[in-house]
Structure formats: structure tokens, C-alpha cells
Length: 475
Image (cartoon, rainbow, N blue to C red):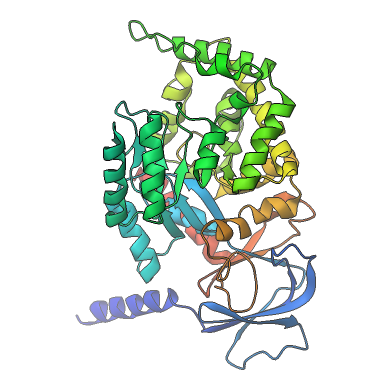
């Protein structure tokens, strides 16, 4: 009768060992190296990883490979740094984390969630007890007394309250402070000042009471969704700032998108290139990072076409969440009006043009998806965002740097990550085709190295199967 327990013990031992690296030393040989420093692709290279670090890089055949190394023949393949998604929201890890890793997304910045969950997951990933991307997080969003943010948020109404919440979040372990739409001017600037004293970056939306230029000059480190740049670039910016809000009567929320369409059309009709360049100059001077989340903007603008298309990624989405994504159910979509739908499509095209113009002006960018929005998929949508940046005018190299090198610069950690150089952390993605030739090749993932641990293509496929199983159970 002892056979079954013994068998279970053997299986458990195998499973535990299977979660450990096969070797402390890895060597990729004959690989095409795209190190993300901006240099051209280095062909037929060998990259050696010892523990969690890159310990040697050189020409294959000339570089000595340690005898204990696990050698991976990467002939015809391309090695890039691990990718980051710098704007996500997630509330579970069993489904989303496998999706991130299988797509080469090895770092995420969560811009709003339950502090106790996010900070616990952050610690578990750092300790290695949870397999997932590195997490930087803010905890709850900081908004005005009338909270506009969805999800975990705190409302503050005075500068003193603003300073207090910054201090509290710092004590709780927040990596940064996220600000939102309804903060008053005085409270916003008090938050910026207090965060500066505590060496906490401030990121997020540009409050309605503040201009993008003011936010940039004040020191806000990153602006999400392009802030109010189009508004500030209008020849009638003051008119737009004082535009009367929609009145919702008897629960008819369609008044809101109707008013947004009227105001937005006026904004687009009065776009002034000269004023836009003045805004860009502030963003460049202050190095105010932009996270445009174009994939979310596309989803909301083109939702009627998207829901009609076949998408294999839907198998990773629980039925309950897919129902929430429906234009008939989702609050962001269900009240759209005949005026709003074509306006939002026009807005999306203009924002693509705007991103291209900002890139040419030297404004710094990072990749983010705003995961939580309908038809935005964990991990997968990072590759969609890369393609949209290229469509906007980025070179493939610049787009990839926005997901690799630039997040490292933003986090102040370029000395340890973001590029493939000796001494840096071994967070790597092995691709089957050249992403500099076609950005869509970023999706041809054959392997991933996360803190020195190698995941083969087969293991990554198993991760996706796990995510699919979780989705089917509705968890």
C-alpha cells in the first residue's frame, strides 16, 4: 500500500526539479544579437549567462564556453532583451502571468490596484516563489473627492490630504504615485511636491484642472494616454477647457459621449501644429515620458469591427470577462451615439499622427497597453502596441526600445537591465525572425530567459495551455 504515496513523492520531486534551471550556465551560440543599445544587429554571436547575469558576449567560435553550460544553438534566431508593459491593471496571476511570460513580457508597471495583492505578488515574484514578470506598482489611484477612476482609488480634497496620502503610500511600499482626473490644482501640486521630497515618481493622468505643459514642468514623470496634448494644441484651447459638461438626466448616459463628440470635433478641427510643437518642447526638455496606450485607443474606436473578427486569443478570456467586453454591456461602449462613433475613429487616427510627430520631435516613449480594457490581452497586446508605434512612424528599433531600454531608463536601472550587455540581468527573448525587418516578428518567440532561467518554446506553450484552462474554469 506504500506504492502510491511513494509514486506521488517521486512525481512531486520531478515537478519541483522541473521548475528549477537545468543548469546555472546557459550559452546561446550562433545567435543574431539585437542588444537594444541602438547598434546594428551583431551576427553569429555567443551570449553566456551565469546565474541571473550575462557574463560573456562574443563571436561564436572565439568565445570560450564553460564546460558546464547548457548550449542552445540559436542559428538563424534573434536575441533581444525582455519586454515591459508599462501600463497594466490585473487582479489575478494564474491566467495573466503565463500570458505575459509566454509573450516575452518580463516586467510590468501596474497603475492601479489593491495594494495588499499587488505588493504581495511583487514580493513573491522577487523571491522566486511566484513565477511571473517583475512588478512595479502604485497601489490605489489618487483622485479628487469625486472619484472618476474605476477600481481601487482614494479621494483627496485638500493639499494637506494630498501630502498625507503620498506619505501613507510611501510607507505601504508604493513604487510611485498615480494621479487622476479630478484632483484640484492645489492638491495636485502638493502631491508633486511631497512625492519629490520622498523621492517617489508621480505618473498617470493629467488632471482636468492642470495642463499637460504644467504637469510636465512640475515634474510628472510619465503621462498616460497622451494626456490633454491635443486640447492644448488647439487654437481654441481656452474654449475647450471651459466647455460645459454634459448633464445626465434620468440615467441617460448617452449625453456624455454626445458632448464628448461635439467638444472633440471642435478640438480636432482647430489643431495648431505650431502650438503642438511648443507643447512637445516642454516634454522633451523635461523628459516627460509618454505611454500612449494606442492598442486601447484602437480597441475602443474600432470595437464594432473587432468583435466581428476571429481572434484565437479569446480562448484565454473567461466567459464572464468576455461578456463584460461586449459593446452592449461595457460602460465605456454601451452609451455610444451616432455622433460619437465616427468621431472616436477620427480621434484615433489623429492620435497616431500625434505620436509620430512627438517621436520625431524627440519626446520619450514607453510601451503600455492599459490591460483591463476590452480586447486588450495580457502579453499579446504588447506586440500589437509595438506594431502601432511603427505604424505611427517609429522605426522598429525605436519601438522595441520603448519596451526594453526605455523602461530601464525610466526606472533608473539602465546599469542592470534594458539592453544585452555583460553584467546585466539575463532577461532575454529568443525570436525566430528579425523584428527589425518586420516588427510583427516580435511575436515569433522560441524561448525566454527570466533571471537566468530558460523557458523553451514547449514550456511557453504549456504556460498558454495553463492560461486557457484557467479561463475555461472562469477563475
